[in-house]
Length: 257
Image (tube, rainbow, N blue to C red):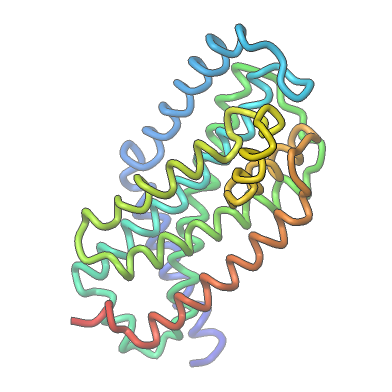
């Protein structure tokens, strides 16, 4: 394919993905915003006033970056896993596989569609957060880079989950039993400095901890971990998942019927 044809293919897939979740925005954009708003009210305004400061900030200021990142992670993942599995279930993905469109273009279109949803929800959640606290971004470059890379990473994870899923029930297993625990235990609601040395070491095995803390560092300027390692880890995982996804698509074992 020519570069122009590749670009048209990519834009077509990406636009379709964006139109899909914006067309049903009451189901895709509103629920996560309502959920995060409830987190702000309960954990920030009600419980946070009793907890006091954490890391030199009010509890509300401390949890807001983590909640924004949680919204980005869950929505980036869920958008791709549901969309690509639906295409596989309807067998429309087979048309993409037999077309001259390169597999990496198909992946990029779906993944960036998930990134778009994650970033839009994250932006709206940020606007809601401004009603509860003042946010002053300390490191704009780090903030933008880590939130984008995290959205890419979990969009890729959703893509691979969709390839392996054999039913609509399968696309909820990873979010329920893996993604949710990792997110809740990833330093969203607390600093790992409050934990014992053993649990601190165990928490550092959680990849979400690094993403949340890197984003918190970008916004507040504080972190429990080395931010450079967070970027290294995210980039490495993106490369691994992208390569794995291309391998699965090239074989088509779970995609063709």
